[in-house]
Image: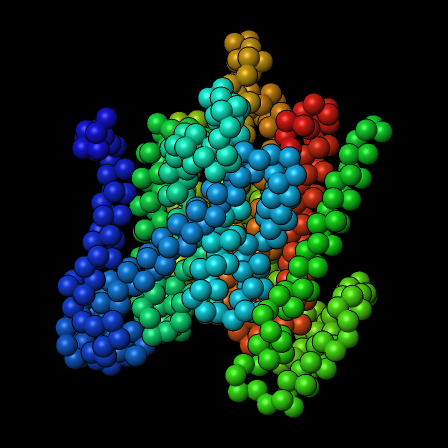
Length: 283
Length: 323
């Protein structure tokens, strides 16, 4: 079924999900063109009202201004670029690591498989957030450390799925033939097994992306993720959290942006998973 | 019965071994930094004198094995060392906050776990009817929202809109009513996610059993929908339900970290986050051990209870398949 034909038969929930994802991707790609103001440009007083407040001073802002008087809408749009790109990069890194190790474990078996499996068990026995906080405390919260630690934690989940999928394939005759033919581990991994586990892995990618994206948002929210003045949704919630006590609902915009994207992706995954069983129900 | 005891002992031994390796990991985290840990913690502007002082403070001058032995011996006695930031004994810092965190988690668990299981059973009885549909959608929303979004939505509703509950749970003194009002919003936020999970997993567990022939048989002999679910399906679904309940308890212990930051609640999670920001490593290590210990302990409990609730898991063949 081609992409367009699949779209035509998609249920309403999947269409909503796709629309949401498309909107975010559009913001990500064209942030400077769409945003009315600059990422760190100060356009008015702190926490000025938006469209709902006709008495708002200063230039017109659709969603008001933040604690430093920057335009919330512009920062939300630039935030799409920073938050999503970072999460995509991290997920990609975790998939490369997790899949490679999973394939090695499945193809080599024996001691290699045992050692990798126990290591992964160990990391998974540790609550993810606590592990990340420990590493950030020791190594400091810089962007490479952040990407590295989240990719490592997420790679353990990818490892399990890749290993399980690769095990099934590795038991089949054509892999045995390749082995007898004298092909090396690298060839068997890349040419024999990988093409056969791409589909389940791709289905998993959306789920893992959601996890990584929420994880980064959470770390930014508690002040240990992306650092100011970079526009990022998690940090935006944090910086403006105090406003809510005064009845200013501004923190709900970036928090809602995060929530909307995860729901959009979940709707798309549900639809994709309906024709492709075996997507894990893990948190 | 002998076999069960052996299996439980084995699980406990595995749990202790995991805890031991985790403690090594937490302890060695400091030494995994490239270069001198004291210099790395203090940063570029450190004077040689302050680096030497910190080395002394962290005990870096002693051999690694001695330091680890000292540290674990201290942990077992409840002596966590001293904080780098304010030089107070860490046990003194942790004790009141541990109590605060546990009471929050306990309140959330008392609300969420029974309600989640009950709603899950109700959903299975009313399968594919309006109640089930609503519960399914609402629980999906509850578990896909980040915790802080749910938290601020509740704040916007109950504090800003209605003015019933405080948006911040700062001080923990006062009578029972004050304490409960203080805990209400954080506990509610935690509960929503847990109810969502427990509901979905309970329903899924019961649905899994509902497909079996003996349930069909019960239905054919005229047992009503409640009887089928409660008398026939539930006992066999109990093992996964117990499992998910305890896994969610473990989630509560970790989930409090974010919620405590949202509500400025003086618990262990807030202490951990503050200490990470200040890079107060000994406090971070102590908090990590407490969180990891609770988490591993609860997961172990889930394993053991599942073993006891489901005789099939005790058969070695089944165990192999599970591993």
